[in-house]
Amino acid sequence: KIGDTSWIKPVKYMGVWWEMIAGGKPWSYTNDIPSVKLGETDYRKVKSNGNHPANTRNVKKYIDFAAKHGFDQLLVEGWNVGWEDWFGNQKDYVFDFVTPYPDFDIEQLNRYAHDKGIRLMMHHETSGSSRNYERHLEQAYQLMNKYGYTAVKSGYVGNILPYGEHHYGQWMNNHYLYCVVEAAKHKIMVNAHEAVRPTGLCRTYPNLIGNESARGTEYQAFGGSKTFHTTVLPFTRLQGGPMDYTPGIFEMNISKLNPNNSSHVNATLANQLALYVTMYSPLQMAADLPENYERFMDAFQFIKDVPVDWDNSIYLEAEPGKYVTVARKEKGTNNWFIGSATGNANHQSVISLDFLEKGKNYIATIYADTKDTDYKLNPQSYQIVKGLVNSKNKLKINTVEAGGYAVSLFEVTNSDEMKGLKKLSVSPIK
Image (cartoon, rainbow, N blue to C red):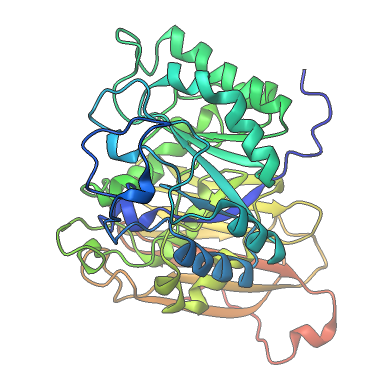
């Protein structure tokens, strides 16, 4: 039994990740090693490829941005030796999960992050070698405890080793559970990617704070998921537990990040904001690069505002493949947030705000598609409308294919907060 769970806390995080997934930059440190021998290969004697994002300087840049904007943690992938031998090599002894590359100062970066009020998030990619992960698990968790890591993203990309076992087989189910149980002994939260689709296990082991276990945002960089994808997941994958979908992409044209990648994120910017409410997870990532957020700071405000812990959830309207609209109440407050994601056709959303506390006024900020928004040709066209609402109001908002809207509803606690604000009409979005 886990016992005390006070150390299990929801997390909003950023990551050194999209640079590799969409940008084509390497997780590996060098191109000079044909085969890594853990404990023998001396990375100080090889030449860096010069394009390795998990380096001290770059990670500090991310820490600064994440801390400035109120995030809890920063994920860093590619920090540890062995990536030269990972996916496709079917290597058993591939990572040791404790040895950093020469350009990643683990002690300095953790101290730097803590001084800024955030933590680093650990990354354990196994490359499918689950047996090797179990071999190193205890020392890997001890390293996390030493440097103050409280959460780990684990990954299982590739065929499973030992041969004959598979991601969804019983042997691997036992492995996933073993990792979660051992993590609990070290007061570590687990976010497992490429793991079996969950079936409520997080209720027994709440330190299993997140899972991927379906096509997440990374598939937008691998060819673009269908426009209706995120309107189906709440009816399928999310029935088994929270999903670390990694939303928040603001630059949809992947070629602008990597000229060799012609993929497109099939969503509007407003749709990406909506996912923070429709795709439930107590572990939510702002997945894009800081420089892309800096271009749209008014829209980024919603990501900063939206919580990751809720008292109540209400599904206001939904039709698989077409649309899903969800309202959630922030834990411990009277503030509400709404997210609406549209699927494969335009949609007019008409919702009542009768879930708001009667007799109270709320400051509503609506982030929505415009009449000119097009998920392929003009995805970054959005509008922001701000005004006063109460429980008697209705909102009527038009969305485009792969579009949506997000709404923050902050309870008015001081009459001065209402100055200059008008009451929103039934159809506030033009």
